[in-house]
Length: 438
Image 1: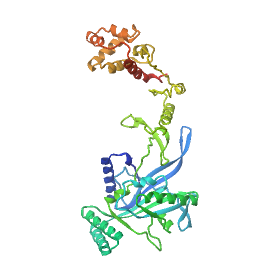
Image 2: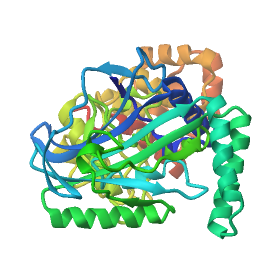
Image 3: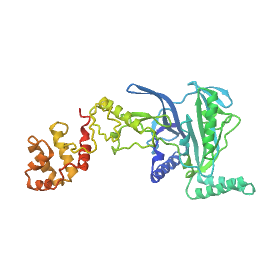
Image 4: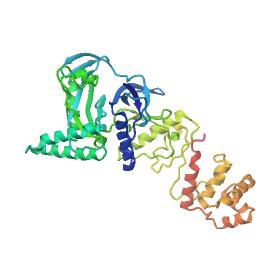
């Protein structure tokens, strides 16, 4: 068996169409491998970032199979999966691992007719491993197998058995429709330094999964299960069957974490994984922080700005702060606060700002072109006039009256140079790009 490292996807934030594409890739993965072990591992480690240190969880996904390559989920071959060994069996339901942690493997043995896709992500913060052991069965063997099982149950009057019979009938139709029959086992491993806490984790996971209609239990064959053996010397785990389409519900290659290697460390996620954001690595540099009152939007913003400043002091900050929340701390991060008061008659004059070396000529040209809708074919004229006149004028009104180009001058005559609240506001916002230039 060869092991491959797989790349997880941000499943829960995808559109329905993108989810369907990912789930179809998952079906393709199972169908192409035919027999293997799909594994999620969560391991706690110490995370360091520019003097900050904290415990975080790192989540990796693997697949073990007897194949040379895997064309799904950016699979990359690895020598082995870093798992601790078993030291001893503490009791029939508990192992002691080589890393001094107690471990218990829970086996899912009952599934409802419908389970929401990706439901296993709800236990990521509580389990150390999730393993899906699977084997596809050839169609010429699968159909007779399901038919025999259906006939054995069809004579029963039990409501539960009748429901199982109906499921088997649907399974036959699915296989006839092109799906593969899959024999699988779902194992969940929990670990702790204390057996009492381990028991608490087990109850917690059982409660979560029962909410989805899934039952789990820890059988007395823990060493075998930890090594992905579903049969011991005396007992075997009961097989579960489904088709490849229904297996989509067990998709758990879900990586909701944000880990840009050169990004700003913002904290840890709900599953305990580090969050690092590098907006320059994204196709769109815009992002928004949302949340209910008191959820930490402002604190997240402050942490991000401070740590971004520590990474690169040349980055300019632009802030619009109507509540003056950042005014008092502006000097701490090397920013300059420009305060605008109600009924203030004159806003920020871009010509004055340029004369004071707060703005460059190109920036002033962009500001004026944007505010007054200067056509693109005249923007070169604007830059020329700025270059020729700004050493001789002190403000935008003087500049407007000194423009030589007749076409451009006719535009300026129509401009509202008298100070208005609208004009002041726009000029202020446009000029904030230089707040941290010092």
